[in-house]
Length: 110
Image (cartoon, rainbow, N blue to C red):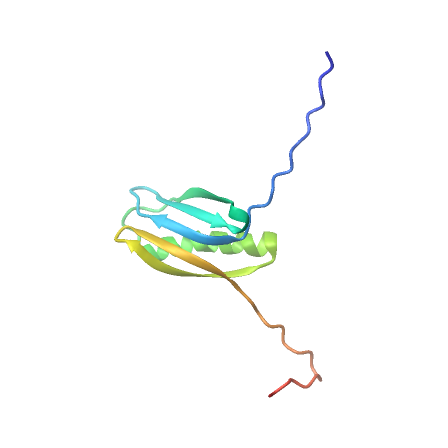
């Protein structure tokens, strides 16, 4: 019987993050992320339990911001709020930047 040649399936790009749920941990801080297109994933931030929450939030968000900028060409921002004393949710929004007008073009002032 002839074998079919192996084909590599192209992985779909991970979507633009919409929300991050961060939990406290002992040696790692687990998180779950949801993305556009109802995708998502989970992972762990390798930081000690006594790390400042703000440092952990910055570490995980920086990874997603860099990824989103590189793969999707989109800038994102996050606003964190507390769900419980040991969990936080980061609501992510796209940042829209305006391109400056080229030199010599009058700006519209209304």
